[in-house]
Amino acid sequence: MTISELRWLLLIITGLASGLLAKLIDVGGGIILVPVLLTLGHSYSQSVATSIFAISLVCLYRSFQNWRTSNLQFQRMSVLEFSAIVTVLVSTSFVNIVPQSILEIGFSLFLLLNIYLAHLRRQLSLNADNTKSSNINPLIAKMSIGVSAGLCAGLFGVGGGTAIVPLRMLYFEENVKIAIKKSMGLILLMSITALLGHIRQGNVLFLSGLVLGIGGTIGNRINSLYLPKLSQKKEEIISNSLLIILSIYLLVRAFEIF
Image (cartoon, rainbow, N blue to C red; front, side, top):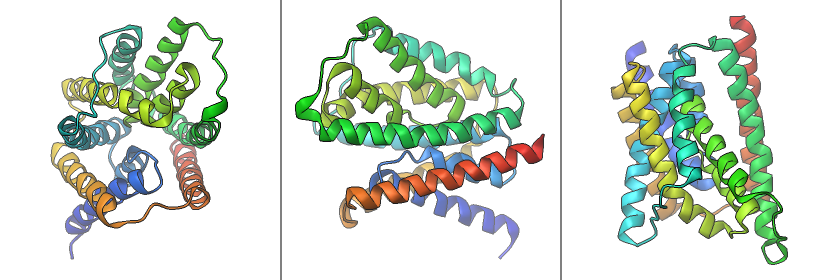
């Protein structure tokens, strides 16, 4: 098997793994796609752009499925959506300006932040009946969610659900199912906006993204049909271990680049 064939095989496996993990341990597939693309020798801007292309394909498929079951909700344009779109458009330009080592350190810290966000989501789910009213100003709450989600898509090449869902639960006292349902439309909108921004800058590797996106869609489907749901404890151990390993790996890469 040639090196070129091995690269495509790795992309296929990565796409499948991203779809399986996204459903199995409830962690975004983009956190796997970007490190693998970097390992294959692509620049940070190409890796993030190609990841968001693959995620857009998966989002389109999942949105179609949710639309068929009336589970897809597009919110009227508000401060939340507007701040997310503006942040996406600004952050997509940063990946071609900021040094790659700094961006990889930022991605490493973002992975660690996901551990806290996942823990917050679990805690809010457990305490759903005892949720206290949030004291934060609604306008500030919407802006903070929009900016956080926009950074996820534009700067890190991920859908942003890991940030949007727990923050909606925290600020708006929504249960996890409602928060996910209301986040799907925004994730699709941000993914497409980020994709267009990266296409304009010539960052997207379309063929690689297509392979990853198809693999992610198939992985999602396989998980939904055949794989059992893990216990919360196992899910937490696997997801935290994966995030820590990838975070350390990106930190090592970043300091090698310096």
